[in-house]
Image: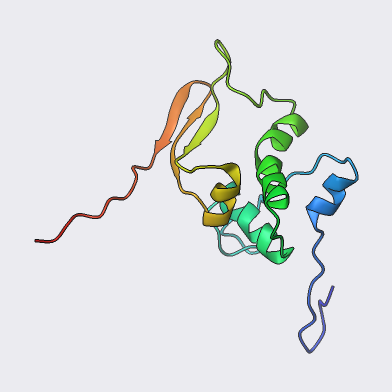
Length: 133
């Protein structure tokens, strides 16, 4: 897809939403963060879903919702993991302070905290602006 050329050639990108529309379980992620293949990134799945939505030029809320599901319920399904919190369950989740899944992707919502198997793994307090007097 353009390697070895002397001029720029756009790389092809698969629109995962088109595959999802065919009934396939689709997910979005990356295992290449800050390395020779992808020398940037922060492992944020929300940021990755936002980038994919931008590249595929998605605008409809239902398409953005589908991208959110690719990093949440679809990923859990693909890994045969529980996708919903339940009493007595393994409480693995990331908390986002946002009004909807669509807003999470559109605004690249920042995670406030995360749990894995019932244990806190990180906390990222919400930023506040202090009034100046």
